Length: 51
Image (cartoon, rainbow, N blue to C red; front, side):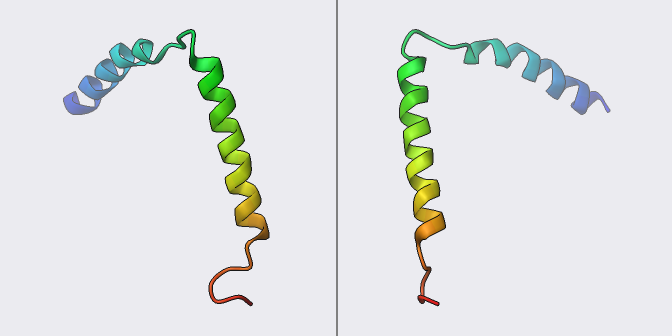
């Protein structure tokens, strides 16, 4: 039980470090474009071996 409480406390202190910076909008746009491209590839790829 003390380990779980310690993990929660550490998590609460680390979360604010992931706040958005000025360049995060560009990063978000690039990640979104990459995710869309990957999703399109996954959906349209016939697989290996092709079925």
